[in-house]
Image 1: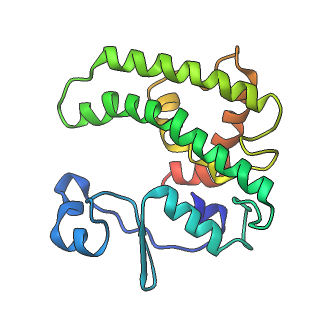
Image 2: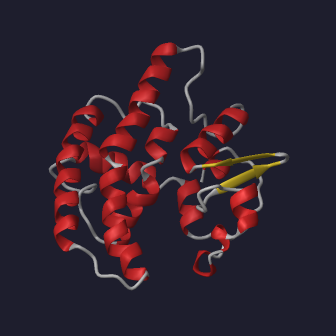
Length: 198
């Protein structure tokens, strides 16, 4: 998605997780020491972890496509971005990814989901989104009035729980600013292209 936002050509090389390709010794040695995806290979440089990859791309190609990071010399905007990025990692990801883990990844591996845990995660996420509503009532995006990586980091698990699992926490009428923000970021051309496999 970030490569598409930045209009950077790339080659996608699938890793067959079902066959454990990500756990093979060569992969662990040369790509990702924890045996996970994604990994970006850029010439002689290899970087893993999706947020780190995204920041790398957004920094390297700052002058192309959509600006997704604030200018490094604007300390206030950088601070607001770092705050927004922290909001996602502390107040969204653990709960949305937890729901996905229970209802998607456990089920795919033949295990039974813990519905009590799902209920607790959803209740916590629902409460956390009240804070999002307060922020988004004052500005268009989490770091201000320009979209940043901090907003886009919500898309994978947000889409999974909203679209695939029909959770309504991001689309509730009682949180109109969260719903507006979610509609905005989840309908971005780059994200829709990724969702469609393009």
